[in-house]
Amino acid sequence: MSNKNNKINVPEARAAMDKFKMEAASEVGVNLKEGYNGDISSREAGSVGGQMVKKMIESYEKSL
Figure 1 (cartoon, rainbow, N blue to C red):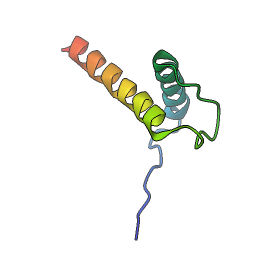
Figure 2: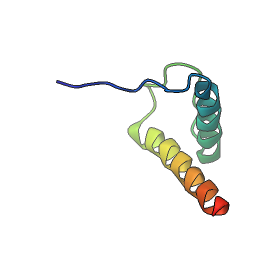
Figure 3: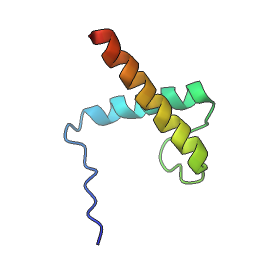
Figure 4: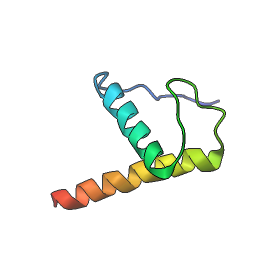
């Protein structure tokens, strides 16, 4: 049995996260569209997520 808990705790953050995701996708050359993107490959989706993590780590390291 799976327990999905992917609610955003701060609703105002959704727009910022969507913008961040679109910027990361653009940087790695993945064409995301608003809404459903289930037609992109796992490799493309992973590259977007990886770019987001990379940028978050860089931001954190700059703040130290």
